[in-house]
Length: 156
Image 1: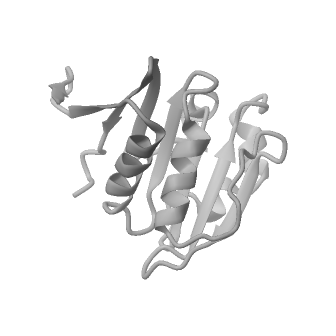
Image 2 (image 1 turned 180 degrees about the horizontal axis):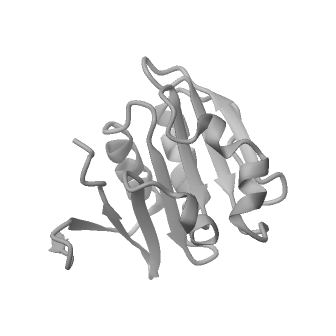
């Protein structure tokens, strides 16, 4: 299903009734990413943001466990991928402001070639997100979830 927003950007949606289908969509979207992308992953608690990230990590060849970085804020994972060398997984839930993320060196990796940056709770740092950010939202839709996403206009 595809919807068109007011700014003529296409919003895509996919209903995933099972975790397996959520993981499948995560892998399909990840095939579009080659390094330098920022993924803003939003949704209520328990909608599967970390699970989605785990599926992307598996696609990137990461074999170490990927867990929610809620308490450490930011985790770095080395990838076995031709162009993405590191996955940066950020959870801004506990941040007070975007300055907290800047102090963690956000500009050193976010949007840089060779890095894929996935940010949970991006609403907290919206002022730091560039126009070419991918926005992915997960909604509870029992028994599964509805996943909507917008590719940035500059994305292929």
